[in-house]
Length: 142
Image 1 (spheres, rainbow, N blue to C red):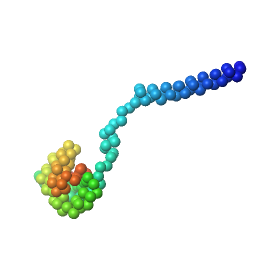
Image 2 (tube, rainbow, N blue to C red):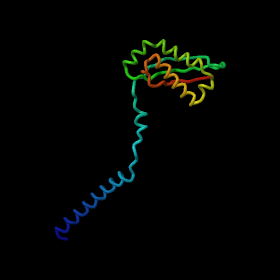
Image 3 (cartoon, rainbow, N blue to C red):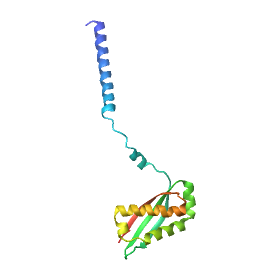
Image 4 (cartoon, one colour):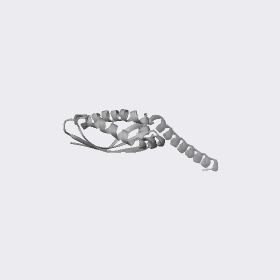
């Protein structure tokens, strides 16, 4: 082989490898592209600090009892500091909501989600809509 043929063969191999790699990457992006699930990104994102409200033990309607620890997620640190001063009012709202529930109102996951929404609504009456979510850290009923 002469020198020109050898250079031509090496360039052809290099060009072939480059096109093969580029084509493979392009095909993966076009044909095997998985859409990004935006719900996963928002579920991981924290939007505000957490403020522990306390542990509550209440008698439910019908003779059962509920023991739970509740923490709330607030909009910002300033709201958390303000709500620490309103602690007694928040605990009173939680006790009044929980004491008016029966065992059936707390047993199922759907019932707990309804309870969570009601607590957010009632606590925001005191918190001036600064509470984003209610978290049940423990939840024991009998």
